[in-house]
Length: 351
Image (cartoon, rainbow, N blue to C red; front, side, top):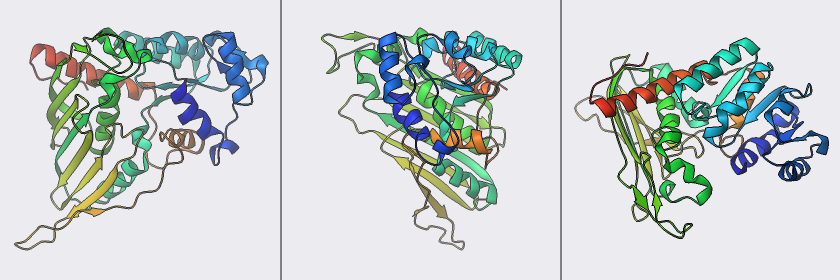
């Protein structure tokens, strides 16, 4: 709930979203915490719920946000969809492809609109890059490379221990990598085919938050390379490291006439917007020029989720900014293709 409170609720209570949305109900796992949450956000205690079914049956609730840990997404979203509510589910949508398929079907039956929290697409930095790419300023795109290192995600407090279990699919190969790969495909198109290597280099870790070693079998690195449908080649590397190594993120998009580069000291570009730079060839024998920073608007609020709510209420300024359950299913299929490629050593397609 800390993420939902900080990124969703606070954004909704400030302009410009406060004129478009009203928080009418809350639901947590216990009555006590639900009442405390309701009081904090100015919601009536009669709307402090402890079950998704209560939200589903409330006629004053139009849109429900499912912002709990991944293993609970499916069971909480299903009754909301069946009731015809609009539903916003954090990324990843569900733990398995079967669950994703069931949620897609429930959404079609219920008729409500759906959103999945792949908000990197709505990041001002990503949308600015899209404008540049769509303008043709870089010419034909020939290659893109993403390299990310993180020194903190392996060492989180115990409430995140479920992320260490491979069966929960809530790890670097799905969550952050899913966000970044989705942004890549939003800007440059889907992969025609891909190969992937996924590893667990740290089956046992020690953190400042645990009394003893923590066993884990979830991936802590993912490498993907392949060819995009446009013909451009792509490589992607996301690695979790020990605390002594620096965190960094670099994503370069190279075209015939120039290049773009995103840079950050945090791989979670869906939360913390990276800086954007452009490099334009000068022509002649000396085609080198300096990277120049591109000015990018500030996000509406921390986490860049507010941009999704704005697009949901006002319409998309850039087509494809919002991802519904069908779009999320495509990204899930892509990540399953990565897992299959890593297990079999064979190139995969997911379209």
